Amino acid sequence: MVSLALDRRFALAARGSDLRTELVAGATSFLTMAYIVLVNPAILGAAGMPPAGVAAATCLAAGFASILMGLLANVPLALAPGMGLNAYFAFTVVQAMGIPWPTALACVFLSGLAFLALTLAGVRQMIVAAIPAPLFAAVAGGIGLFIGFIGLRNAGLVAASPATFVTLGDLHRPGALCALFGLALIAALSLWRVRGAMLIGILATSLVAAWFGQSGAPAPGYDLGAIRGTALALDFSGLLGRHGVGLLEILFVFLFVDLFDNLGTLVAVSRRAGLIAPDGSIAGLNRILLADSIATMAGALLGTSTVTAYVESAAGVQAGGRTGLTAIVTGLLFLATTLVAPYAGLVPVAATAPALILVGGLMMAPLAEIDWQDPFIAVPAFLTLVMIPLSFSIANGLAFGLTALAVMKIVSGRLGRGDWLLMLLAALFALRFAYLSAA
Image (cartoon, rainbow, N blue to C red; front, side, top):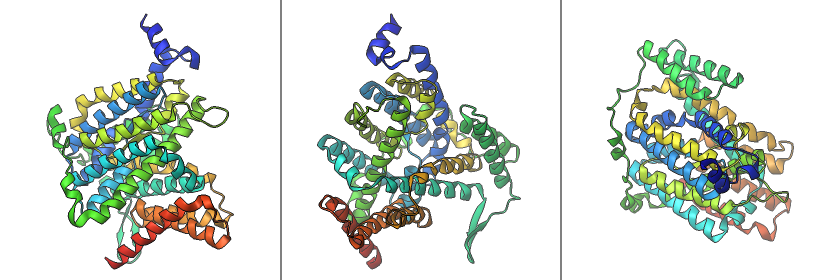
């Protein structure tokens, strides 16, 4: 009876799946994504947020968002706090710009609200049409380099140098050795197609690090109340005053990156699941984007950075997942993980750094879609790609890439009436550069 009811609710048979397959697929997606429970607190902890609270918020946000996606849109797409955006939140917004993390959480909430408004108004299609696909690929690659560089720095494999800006770190230090061990282990497990390779690697490296006395901070106690350290901590009053102009930039980056990261993941997973129509349309697209925007707002309220779709969902699709039941199973497993979330602080950065490095590497794949022989495409893409990690800012990469694209259209005579939005974005970025130069 239960199986029959689920079949009717999620159209299991119609999509060539069954209950057992969906359960296995959901668990597979969870295993490939679960590393975020350990990595997200390490990254947001650098912003001064309590790691135990972030860990609990990560589990709850991922659980809620994935279940919502499954129920509302009936697609095998799981969500969690996004890699890249959490780094931008911690290292650019909080550390570099000096904005308190409660105010940054308010920005995340407002970006989700704006995403919701754009979805309901249909503006999303206009923004997507204004920017060519190669630039999306460059953004993904730039974020991958950004994440990978942070991982290399946390591992101690690269260090600051007054002569060359960066240089090779001290590979004799226990932290660097532990990170190298973790990198090799996760890479080997991935080659052998072991499910949950990143999670296994992080946990194994944590044990090795503990042997060398490199463990993280002691666990704050087995108390689910740790969520009180981040939940409802948003500070909207901080949106006013001296941070006003900079916060507009932050809102734009959170919204823009979440929009295109979500769309790229959606297309990739939907194609693998056979859910894209012959005309290229995706059934229930607005419901998918609606779930994503609500998830971001819920995540901010719980105390974590932007929640977005995970490309690791493709692992569940590869295991046979075809419906929202896969995402629901993944969400339930994240909720169960909340029971041990407060202990995430025990995991040292040397253990999470290898995951950052490898995730960054995996995000290089879209760069193959760029025609590097065509200057019209290659110049904006290259500027986007390199400016994100070298300036430690996704905003700068987007600004250089979009502005260069607008200039290339003008000088090549390819500017058309449909490019008005691109030109508007480029003008706004030019004003932003002028403001930064005068500041």
